[in-house]
Image 1: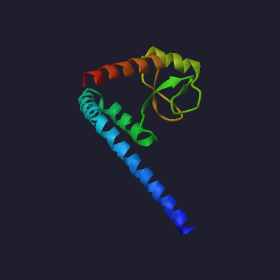
Image 2: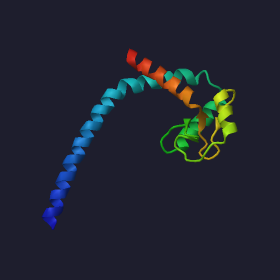
Image 3: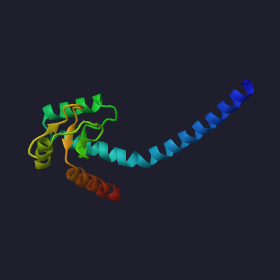
Image 4: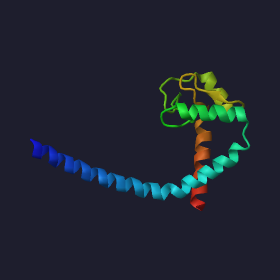
Length: 128
């Protein structure tokens, strides 16, 4: 039984080493993008109202995956399964004010805005 356990441990440790090597390769690939985004974030922080920036940072630190701004997908905010009322969805689509999800506290944006921003990010990364 001990030899069987040691064999399993060796297999798991080999698998772990392989996964760590994969992770370090991925981290090296994304290092340039991460540095660029950190720089851009610092630039935009100077332009944003302090009250809003503090709220954004508080939301990011309190949620599990670190996403403070989420889009509406199938009538609910991404990362939450609570349905957002249609009137609130219309207000979010109007983009006139900042609206937060009452359950998760995240800032909500409509799907089209999220897609526009995703395309902008892809263009920025293409130039790197």
